[in-house]
Length: 153
Image 1 (tube, rainbow, N blue to C red):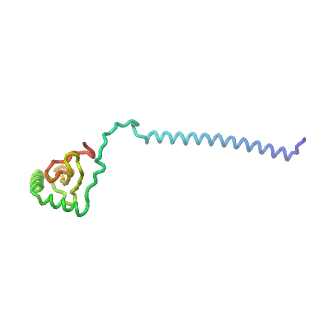
Image 2: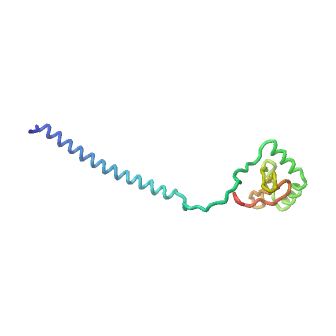
């Protein structure tokens, strides 16, 4: 069966379209490969340095929440009116510390096995170097400055 010139022209045009689609497909594959490669490189830079992290001992420190409201205010008032706090405060002030005030005091109540209920109070003082230190009172007794760092055992 013979094809007319018009049909042959349209067939040639279809072949050219197919070639253009194949070229576009190759370009699409290249750009997709570049995009995936870039994403992989980005993920490598953002990933943590070591996938194996040391296992930490189980700790309930995160469950401790500072008291607020009337119960906190009652404990703070009892502490700052007591002789133990007044003596510690006077000693720290003589060493160049500045008391941050009653508003900067944190109170935590918890149960400790073997000890029963424990009330921990952290009073903030600014040391002569300008850094804030928390001085801890446990059940009303002075325990000393809190260790530095966000989490110590």
